[in-house]
Length: 175
Image (cartoon, rainbow, N blue to C red; front, top):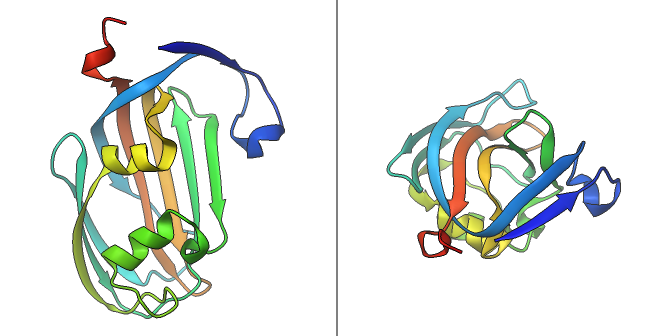
């Protein structure tokens, strides 16, 4: 485990907000504690979705996409033990994002310039595996809340609020 201090800064692409004192970070395990749908910024929603927690690390998603979509944008915000966002990611086009493009093309069978076609898609997501791929093997421990919001120019795709606990991996508890 490593202790770090993060101070208020406009650098780091607004990943910090306020003061965060002595955060612990290192290799982590995840436990999903809660999931809720939320409302996106558009009046119209083009995806009817059902999301269920399968186990500590897996979400099962059932999407019924009612309209073809292109140029889906996104925002991901993360809070730890507080209401002040610690992590903010804005994505102008999911299909141009090095990590999310692969996910969209694989899960939603999108081969045509990353267009998302209407239809029904059922899939599961291992949040721990995705987090480790996206953030690397180390991250800050604590009770996190992540909100993601994906939408096109016309309609909302999905807005979700995921609460999870990030703890040291069992192999590092005695470190």
